[in-house]
Length: 189
Image (cartoon, rainbow, N blue to C red; front, side, top):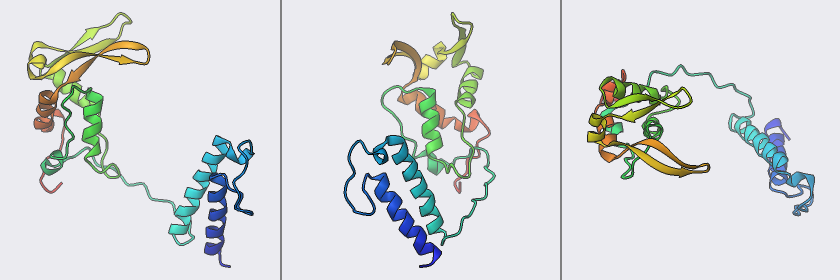
């Protein structure tokens, strides 16, 4: 048996144990067996995945080289894939959706602060002091005119207020994304 075969064999044992099966008898182990402990099971799944990667590399352990990421960049054709919401969503959710349409392995993530700073600069948002000495971003009249509004939602600690962006506001941000930051807008991208 060569090393690669030994790894595959060991992985099959680890997979069985991670799924609560005795690899020697192929019987399901009792619920109170140590192998059914969630932390041990997760650890076994982790080790199994590492072994899978080594097996996929022909039995060699290879360190993946770190790729230097370029600044956030999105092409016009990629923006067509933006998942608009008909319900108001937060700037964090908008940013997450924008980051979902670019390759995360080669591009840095767009930060919500880039969008909110731009909206403050064009007087669509303003910073309002809070009771605890911090600031919150709230829509101005111009912001409200494009669909940026204060929203109330219920969280695990009760109701809270957030700045929501309706579909029109989302489209406004996407249409002006080139102004938000130094985003390279190119068809080929």
